[in-house]
Length: 450
Image (tube, rainbow, N blue to C red; front, side):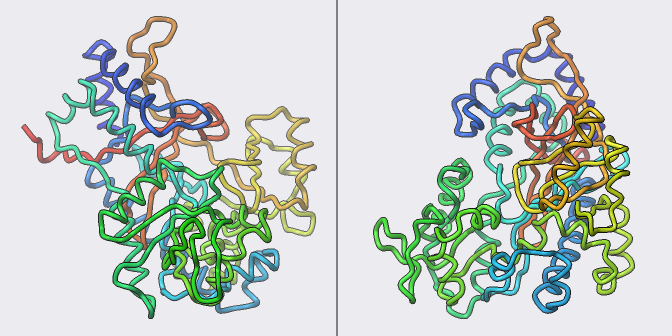
C-alpha cells in the first residue's frame, strides 16, 4: 500500500501537480449525486491503492472478524443469561429476537479500522452493520480520479482494477433470501430507511442493481409500509414486498417508536424476509467491544480468536459508576480515551479526549456517566500522505500533507467486497469534522498492462 501511494504521488509531482486532472475531478464530483451536508463530498486526489497481498491480508481479517461476531450473535440468541451483558432496552432485545428465515447472522457489515500501511498493524474503530453506506462515494470518486493524467500514467505501469459493491450485494442478498422456505423466483425488494436521512446515491444504484438481476425493486420509507396480517405492502401503489434491504439503523427506529410497526409486525409474523435482520444490532452496538473481553465470550471463542481480539480491539468499558472502569483515571488522562454512545452512527455524540482541554474533558466525562456511553482506549490513527484536489493558496501545485487514515472494509456474507477510506486531521475522522474520503483501486504490480 505505502509503496503504491508513494509512486502515485511521485507521478503527480512529475506532472507539476496534474492541475487539469484535479479540476476535472472536482467538476465531476460537483456534477455527481454524492453530495454531503449541502456540498460535493470532499476527497483526496490520491486514492487508496491495495496490492494482491494486501487484499489477501484484509480478506483474512474480515473472515476472522466475521466469524467472531457471528459467534457472539449466535450466543446472544441462544442464551438469555448472555444477553444481560449487553444491557439492551427491552424493545431492542425484542426486535433482535424476532424470527428470521435464513441462517446468515451478519449479511452486511463494514469494519472500520486504523491501519498502518507499512506494517499492517491495526486496531478496530467500530463494527457497522446494516446502515453501512457510502458505496457510491467510492465508485464516483474513483471515476473522477480516472479522468486525470496521474491515474492514467499509473495504470499504464500496472494492472489496476476496482472492487464492485452493488451487483455483488444483490448476489449476497439473494443467496440469503433463497434460504427462506417461501422464497419466490422473482421477489419484489424494498430498500428501506428514513427518507430524510437516507443516502439515495446508494439506494438508487442498489435498486438499479436488483433490477439488472431481474428483481423488481424500490425505495420505501420505513414508516410508510402497511401490513394486513399476510402481506407487507407499499401503500404508494399496493405492491406486495417480499424482501427488505434494511438501511435504517435500529437506534433510529427506536427513536421513532410506533411509526415503524408495519415492518416490525411483518417480520414477527414471518411474512417478509428482512436483510439485515435486527439481530445484527448485537454487534453494531459499541457495547460489543466491552463484551468481547468478557470471560463468558472468551469461553466460546478459540485461543486464536481471543488473541485476535486482544491485539486488535481497543479495551472498552461502559461509562457507568457501577462498571469496573476507573472514571477518575479517564478524566485525568484525556489523550488516552474516547467516549461514544452505546448505539448510534455517523460519529454522533463522539468525544475524543485529544480534542478537548483538561477541564472541558472532565466535564464531558462527568456529564455522560450513566447516560448510555462507553469509554474506549484511544488509539492514534496512522497517517498517510495525501494531495487534495483544490490548489492551496500558497501556490504549491503538489502540496503533500499527512492525514490520519481510517479504511473501512465492506463485508458481504463474510467476504471482503470493497473498501471505503476516510481521512481526518485529529480526533474524529468524518466528513462533518473536516474529513476527506478516497476510492480504492486494486493494483497488480506483477502484471503490467503495457
